Amino acid sequence: MADTPSPASNVPGVNPKAVKIGGESLLDRVLPHMKKILIAIGITTVVLTVIFTRRYFIERGEQKETFKLANVLQIASQPVRAVGDTLDPKNPTYADDKERADAVIAAATNQDVVLSPAYRGGMLMDQGKIDDAIAAYRVGIGADGIDGVLAREGLGIAQETKALAEKDAAAKTKGLEEALLTFESMQPDVAGPRYAYGQYHVGRMLALLGKTDEAKAALTKARDAAKGSMDLLPELIEKRLASLGA
Image 1 (cartoon, rainbow, N blue to C red):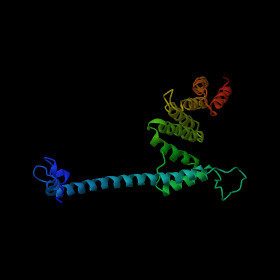
Image 2: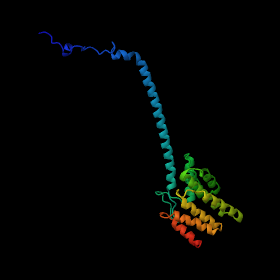
Image 3: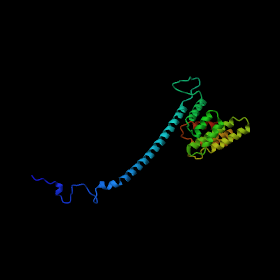
Image 4: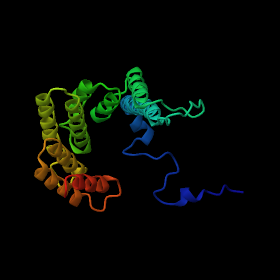
């Protein structure tokens, strides 16, 4: 029996042999450039490796810093026990605010955690280090947003605390005037966070300086700004106004 020709061999123009492109197979064309291709692949691999390795270590570093900060904040979150309560090893507490501040500052120092100026200032205040707290707050008073507001508020409170501890009347007045200026700059934006608190502090300082009418005006601004607030500020303002005969 004669061999049956394959269908492809009967179709005009169809060659069942290897595909040729311009007289060469695809493999023939690629081989001379294989070295360049491999080099390009190698360079790309190195670049991608560097990129992802760098990203890994950056993210790893951020995670490490976050973990350290979380440890410090966990120490800070432990409460101060009530007077007369005994220490419970299963539920760590502190004898007072100073003991907690000591623990937080020590942990931050040991773990190289940089606390925000407002937070560090608060811890230093609890330690009784008023001048150090003032210095810490001053670092953050120019910050944008709530960080700057809190730093200025803390600075004003620290200045007030220092002034009230002065035995010399002139020094006390000067310190209260400094605190007043700080509170006046605390939050200039009527719609900004803690504006009502800023006016409340201004009212308190004016009252301490004997400027009753101006104190009433500032406290009235604070009351209007605090309307609808869920915290204790409205109640505190009303008590202040009442004490001034308003």
